[in-house]
Length: 144
Image 1: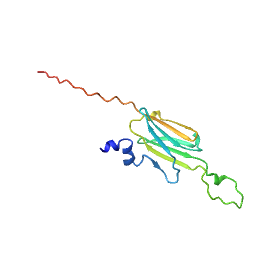
Image 2: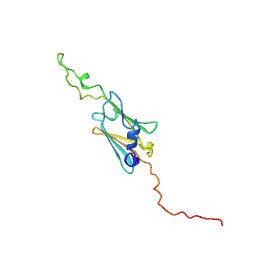
Image 3: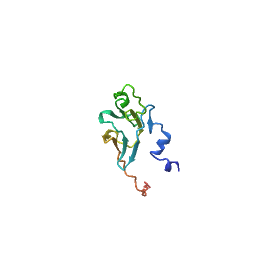
Image 4: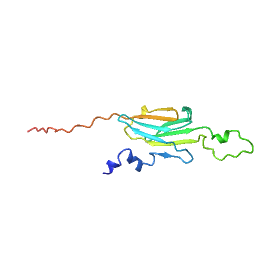
């Protein structure tokens, strides 16, 4: 029963602390993780980040890390009149950091990442495992 409800990737969600790790002080980037028969596809919201601002790397234990660093928030670098006071400054880029524990059946040597229109798409191909053997009767032989 436990495996039917808490199967992959849910088992890792509850028992592995690294499945969706974020770091204090970093922004929480929204993520969609879709599994197809041939690959895992992660789509990460990274508005305002270009390919030079994003670092995707594979770490020990099939952990995929995504780090985005941009310039300081707009409020820190924009010119303002001497008597002006900032009340809210949310538009600037901060730091994004996420980690994902990938399943064991992936081809880590073929991971591809692409950023377009504020969305980082990471495709992690799966290994093609042999098909499940069909049930059959095995003949028993004897030397008698």
